[in-house]
Length: 360
Ligand code: GDP
Image (tube, helix red, strand yellow):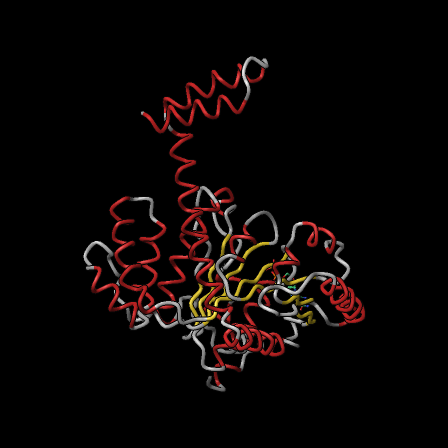
């Protein structure tokens, strides 16, 4: 800036150069049309970490158009041999606990260490709220402009099953694109935590000290799922309370029997805002990966997860087909009335409906 320009007291001091909002990886990339790109071309570009093509392929996964879905399936199958080589980490916690703040500093730590980080989110409520509250790019300003990070908000979907499937498939594409750490954010309400737990290697629960939700977490089995509990906002006047919470959680965790992987879940404190204790979290995750790889639990868990999603998909599909069948809908309505007036047992009705459905 010239001195001349700066003469007026009213002139603004030129601040630091603002980062562009758009991921720099998208720069100089022509708009990618999925229509004109063959599956081979898309897969080839994904493998080169071409973010424009990766994003487009994810859009195909998220599409409800049958043609898009068929193309997406071909892309996923072609990417499968190049997938599976990452560490998948689930991050959950109630709104306001500091998930975005944590992911921002944690993600930066990882990319600074030479990793490629993809941040995905699962938020089934996003279809109701018309837009995701998770994986929001504007909440991770530094990470979004990082060449080695890719952030994708939650797909909107009618059901948790649908959203989970799309996220699972997106993981495969991200891995094929060379992202070696996948962070999956979810909000600490409802069933989405269970879904995330079933698709990650390491499940991290973010907590607040003295928030009074400890019991709720225990009740809903969230604590049991956690491989580490990290109490965030361990700063300023909150530090003492977080220390106390740490010893309480540690005591509570010791009441649970050791899991089949022989891993004793860890309790830590951190301050995402002041970037304190973040490296220690990563060290624990590294320790966990080493531990579960050496006792072969790592691959066993991934295989179990694959089986789970296979069966879950069949269950969901059968249920949806059954209940949307016109004939079943009509008969079910009538039979429910009979059940309500004690004319017939619910088990008889169930048998009758199932045999009608399978014999039609
Ligand atoms: P999320 O809803 O779980 O994603 O939470 P956010 O990351 O949006 O954080 C919610 C609020 O807590 C924001 O105002 C953050 O600045 C603040 N916050 C996040 N982490 C910390 C922390 O470590 N210490 C303090 N003091 N505030 C934090």
